Image 1 (cartoon, chains in turn green, purple):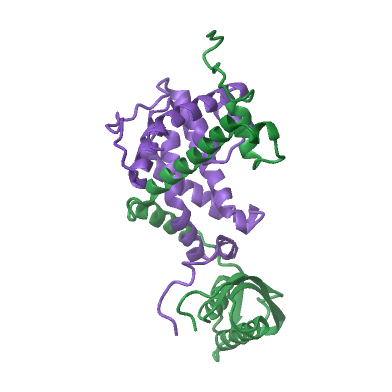
Image 2 (cartoon, each protein chain N blue to C red; image 1 turned 120 degrees about the vertical axis):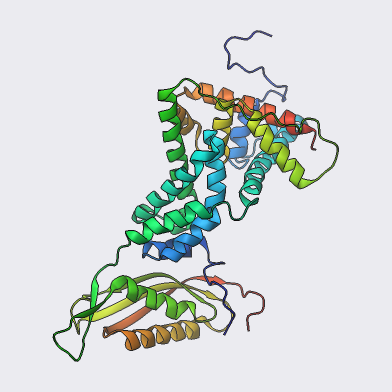
Length: 198
Length: 186
């Protein structure tokens, strides 16, 4: 067998196809259908072998990752420390105080946290995006809250969305002085019920 | 009331990424815990260095957090982060290559060479793990970038400063070697 350069690879006997062609074909999701490959037992065997190899490769890395659950604690807690130290708190959301000389404010980030919590503590709901539209820094200015959420399928979605809206409204009324013009709830995902949920 | 299960534990990646984009650190932490360990293992294998992998994956997640605004689709956050990890690991490989000629990593020889016919998943995966270690460094890097990093041939060529034809050849060799090594486990 003539070796031309160090990376030359001898051809396999795959009914006229090379391993490389087969790998490309596999990468394309075996489309468009290639009869000369699919009708060749040698090719199909090679395709199976390659697919199995990919799965084994992925699983062996995953197994290694799962081996020691505490292994990643160090870099993750370091990461969180850095992130928390540079957190963007957003705009100030003023709160009045009987003593007019005192200026109090919540951060926008805190208000968003409040909204997420109002949703997360409602069984079957999980808040995704959350935006405050309008001039939250000006007392009395109309503010629109826009949230996306995923809901667990169970009761009618419109009723759940309503309840979520009410909970958010209640939380904002209790903790802020924002003038809420509207709360838009977009449901982007409906999840199957998990075990044990009523 | 349900018990105190973290509602984020089962949340979809898209939800977690959306919240992280709004500054929810806990949601981002959940993403790091869910996907970080595999990415750390991948980086270690790619660089041939366990000690640097923590730094690389931490740095990658930090970059991810700071650039969440660039993420087009929250549902793709995993592959987006994986891409950042790959880039960081490749940068380190480049630096190392520029500073010394010892390019390759000699993994400890593995004792598992001709396994008994015990069809046991864990052992099989261990065998795959050490088969990857026994690949020559350039083949292993190509394989990991292709399979785990989801790089195209061209992207691998750019990352490793090799001609695309060489990358193709290395991948064929890697695949063939791995198929042979894993033959015993069929």
